[in-house]
Length: 162
Image 1 (spheres, rainbow, N blue to C red):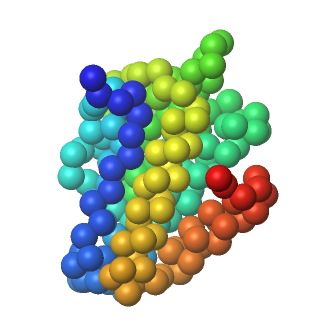
Image 2 (cartoon, one colour):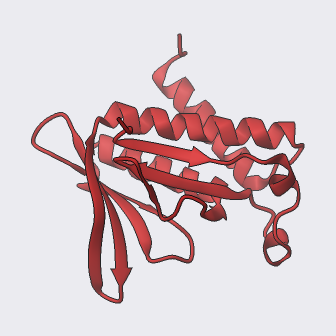
């Protein structure tokens, strides 16, 4: 049975070291990534994007939802009308929705219920995987440093992990 929510990142050293020429000047971690909701890869099974800035934004969105500072979290992708929404339910679950925009009209492609702790764990695992790959590929960019600082601050704020 597929996981209700997962984040996949292909951490290919060659791609981290040699982003497409049109993006090389940005000096950001660029690699394939997607979010799967109920086994459905979104926005596609092989979507390349700026993983570092996206993961950092996703962390902030999820933290706001956890802290009850927002009613939902929007996990957006660059240059695409696709995003994943996370919303509270009456129970202990969040509803994850794959949303595609066509102008002002939205279409929900797939939905699944997931545990908030699982979303957090997936986000942390994807971030750690990306940072490990960046270190191993000797590609330490500003977005990698910002993600690393964010994780370190979060660990200090919540105490040491077991």
